[in-house]
Image 1 (cartoon, rainbow, N blue to C red):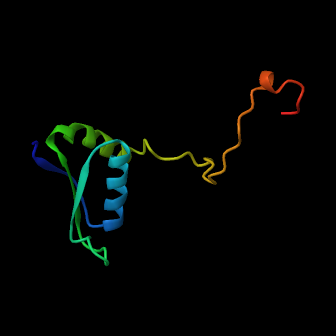
Image 2: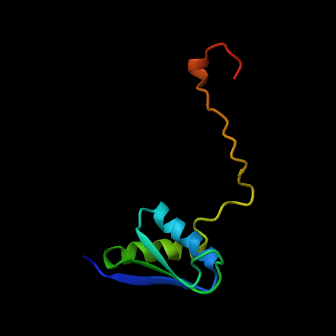
Image 3: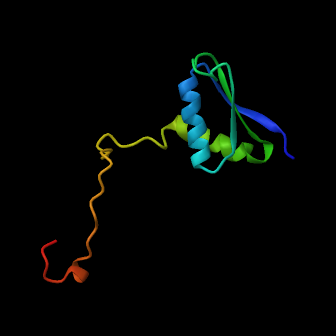
Length: 95
């Protein structure tokens, strides 16, 4: 079994949860530890990953820090998705 290595630390427990979620979204298994656990999430938190995933985790964390995952200012974040209709399939119908 590969050892765990610390790849990230913060004094903000909420930021720690967000970074954990981003790593998990990228299929990186992560362990969050620190004083930010429990019902009152205050204090430092640390993210640990397997040494096998360290390079990939650091690449994701660097991308987050650089703004690579940021949305454009005019991005639609309403959650509503308009269906795409192929004009050829729709025929004479108004699309």
